[in-house]
Image (cartoon, rainbow, N blue to C red):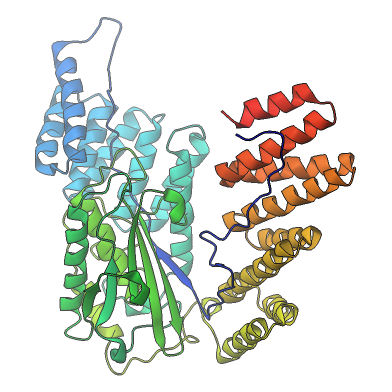
Length: 533
C-alpha cells in the first residue's frame, strides 16, 4: 500500500446499469423462485444414553448418515432403503424419522414424508431442522399457507440457527408469491395462464424468431462444470419443442447481439434473495419483450444440496420459462414453473400444464397487454409509458433536472409503480455521478442518499454515497475543517465495509493519513488493524 499520499475513490459503474450514461427502461421485471433445502441435514448425528450406545443404535447412526450422503448425490432409492432400515433399528429417534421423511419426499412420496416428519416433531420439537423440513414438505405438497405458518414458527423458535437467514429469505419470496397469486387460477386448471400473466401479458414477437441466445460456454465460477452448458442447451430445446413451433432459438458466440444473455455466477448477491438459485430480468416494451438476462448460480445456497446436473437442469428450465414471458409462477407442485424447487427436482420435465401455458401465451389471439394484469401496479399504462418516454427525452436532451422532476412527480402519484421507483433511482444516481465528476460532492451525496431511501439494499447507491462522502471528507481536511471531515471518513468506511473491499482500502488509507496528521496516531493504527487484515 502506498502511504503518505491521498487517493481518491472511483465512481462506481459496475453492476449499476450506469456505464457513463443512464439506462432508463420502460419496464424491468425480476423473475425468480425459491430454493427448497433437502429434508434432512447431512451431519454426523450421534444418539447416546447413559448406558452408552447399543449395536442397533450405532448401526442406525451409520444408516442416517449414509442416507443423507446418498440424497446429496441424488441416489434417492438407495437413500430410501437406508432410511427405512434406520427407523426399524431406532424407532424412538427423531433423526431416523426425519431422514426417512426426507428420502420419501425426495422420491415424490410427499404424504408419507409429511407423516414421518410429524413423527420426528412429536419425538423432539426442539430440533430446528425438523421445523425447517416440515415447512418445506408442506411447500412441495402445494400447502403454501401451512408452509409459511411452519417456517414462521421456525424463525420464532430458532433465531440463532445456521439456516435462519436462508429460511428468512425463503419466507420473503413465498410471501411475495402468495400476494401475487391469481385467485382465478386453481391448481387443477388446464394451464396456469392467469398466474403466468399476473403482472401483464408479455412475450416475444414472431418477427424476433429465432431468438439469439448467448449461453456462456465456460466459467471460472465455483462449482461450474462443463456439463452444465449441455444441460442448459437441453432446456432451451425442451421449451422450443413445447411451443409447437411458436418459439425458436439459435445459439450465438458473442453476447452483444443476443436477445437472451445467459450467464453463470457463484455470487449469491447476483440474485435478489439468498434462497434463489437463479434470476431472470426481462425488458419488455409495447412491442413485446426486447431482451432477457438470465443468471444461474453454480453453488448451492445451502450445504444440504449438491450443485450437479439435475439441480442445474431444473433451475435452467425454470429461468428460461421466465425469459419466454411466463412472469408469474404456477402454484401446482408438478409444474416446472412452480414457485419453489420441488424436493424431487431430479425428475425434471415440462408438465402438460407448462406446455399448455406456453402455447396459450404464444397463441395468435393473445396480445401484449401491460394494463390488464391482476397486479396492475407492476404494469405500465399508456399514460405511464409516455411519462417515462418524456423523462428519458429530457435526460438525452441535456435537461436531467427536468427528467428527475418528472420521475419524482410520477412516483409521488403512483408509489406502487416498480417502474417509476426503478427509474427514479437510476435518475438520482445519474445526476449524482455527474455531480461527482464536477466535484460537487454535497449534491452528489444528496442524490445518492435519496436513491438509498428508495431502496436501502441498493449496493450501487451505497458505494457511490461512500465515494461522495470520502471525497467530501478529503476536501474538508484540505480546508482545515477537521471536525467536519472525520464523520464523513467514518461513514464512507462503513458503507465500503458492506460493499467494496477495494474502495474500503482506499478510504481506510486516507482516513489513517488524516488521523496521523491531526496527531491521533494510535487511532490510525487501530483503524488499519480493524479493516486491513
